[in-house]
Image (cartoon, rainbow, N blue to C red; front, side, top):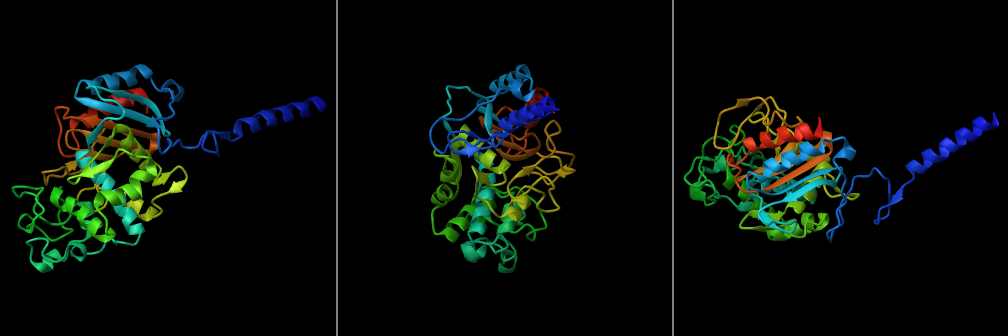
Length: 359
């Protein structure tokens, strides 16, 4: 009996030792806590593919493919730690590049922060911040457009104008009532930045820096001419923030989880694969930029169904996969099949990552 009790005490002791919190340099945290890199410096913890049960050879094969199609920076995080990171074209972890339309998804997140701050309500009329006459629509039609319509690409503005980036009233013409038509329209999105700048009383860059970039250590990130620039690692930091539903190292930046859930789920019944400036995988149908056709099936059959995506021209990608606890970022130039949103690169890279990650 005494030996049995000694055995039980010994097992209990070692079990307790395994569960004891450890000092990671930033205080005492559980060993399985999600990893967040420090806000400054180059330190970023890593883990191996084999420790996750992944196939390291096939993971390298996915990276090798990416390197052949003008990828300059590719990073894979799992539970916040770097599993693999590689650069081409003389790039390094410090090289900055534009995100193109992948920056839309950052704007979608910051809009949630602005609503949380009480400076906007997404159901407000856009004209509340831009003034009446910001379009050439009849006033009654213009007044139908809300910030939420801008977030969901349902403003009703005509996306087939000569210059879809043009923000002057002459370029913003009526096509349909707000909320009745989905169309990927850059000008309507870009005016979101002016709405948020007017509401905050700051430049768009200053507001993003104070409310987001500084909070997650994205020191290199900035906006220029309405386009965001950052490093591959900066984009990966943002991916981790979204994977954690707006939390960074114990600080819940986006406390409005209702907004977060709306942002990362179908936002309207026209394009099931679109949230608030985020692309959504695993839906029954999808629409893509510059088309009114509704395609049956998921955007990316090779990727997990719960993946959400920040997608930009020339294959700028931030993939966030909650079921795998994974973030993947790709920066570079056109892989040869690029569009404003989804492209065949998405399926090509994920068909290889699927073999590596064994899901």
